[in-house]
Amino acid sequence: MQFNSTPIVWSDPKRQTAFQEWFSALCLAHHLDPKSLRLASSDASFRRYFRVNLTHHGDKSLIIMDAPPDLENSHVFVKICRMMRDADLWVPDVLAWQESLGFLLLSDLGQQTMMQALCHPTGDWGGLSNVPSDLSNVLIPNEKTLDLFKKAISELITWQLASKPNVLPNYDQALLHKELDLFHTWYLYQNKKLSSTEIEQQWPSLLNNVYQQIIRHNLSTPSVFVHRDFMPRNLMMSLSQGDHRLGILDFQDGVFGPITYDIASLMRDAFVSWPEEFVLDVTIRYWEEAKNKGLLDQNGLWDDFGAFYREVEWMGLQRHLKILGVFSRLSIRDQKHHYAHDIPRFLAYIRSTCFRYRELGPFLKFLDHIEDIHPQEGYAFGRV
View 1 (cartoon, one colour):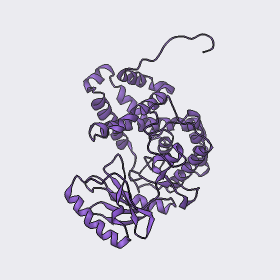
View 2 (view 1 turned 120 degrees about the vertical axis):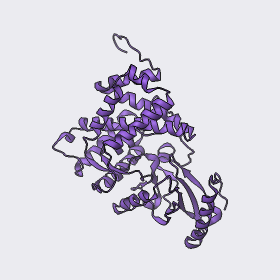
View 3 (view 1 turned 120 degrees about the horizontal axis):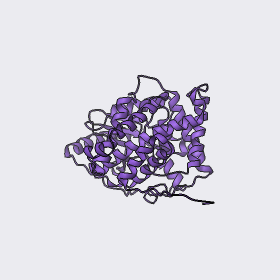
View 4 (view 1 turned 180 degrees about the vertical axis):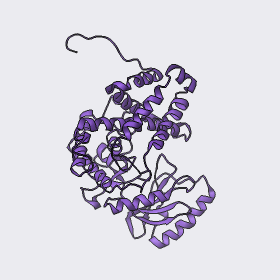
């Protein structure tokens, strides 16, 4: 059997030697075929994933995580993995862990993500490079699309129902400020080349006022376990689990914070966009199920979907601003330039939200100024 894949390249010879020694012992203990080792994927962090086949089951494979301990905290991954498994969620099994080196052997949840199923139901799919980055073109959902999103919100609520305080880090004011600072530092200063003097002279106190509004809204919502990157690219499909389950990956940044975060993440995706009617449909379904399961107070503010959706949008605004900073940093500092291609999508999300809320009007003018956008103004008479 031949395996065609991107070669595994090591920038640190000492780490490569340490891996080879660990992997050799692993092959004996777990009956792995060393010739089948290949790169499975990498992400926005410093983690990488390899895939390796079992010796006597060539069609079955396991995953190896390469997470340098000075750059990535494997302890958090293992902790949340166990928590999710205890909550009856489908996540990888940790089969072996070289704690000091940051090497983990994991069960393989398969090779088809929910994103791949949405874009190419046959599974013959090579990436999202053909999906537009702004909102001028969106994917059109169908019955299968809705079915997959209903499964996603079911898994999300299962995770939220397991929530307990003082187990995961709090998504508090300090962390919200830290994330918004990514937008300030990497998008405004590094990407757009603005200076603090220029901002303060032309837009005095504007950004600080907007940040305070965002933080106030986000801290007003109930707190639950937050995945923090809950979107179709991190949800897995597998026939072995039946059609009713989705696997969950990339959960190591989980926190205890706003219940609105993950539904905002799911419906305002980093890599594809959906019609507003579909976003509302799925969000309403989530809201109804969350209320029925006791996650939202049915006798207070949360009994009003309009009020709930407003808080989802404010949470989404915070996430969108953070991602502008993160994607700018990945492109400028880490030379991962493909992330910059999706910046227009998040600008579109942000402008759409700002347009709907009067208090965000000054911030919308600021964005239009730095992006050199000139909205059309004028009067129209009759039918347009």
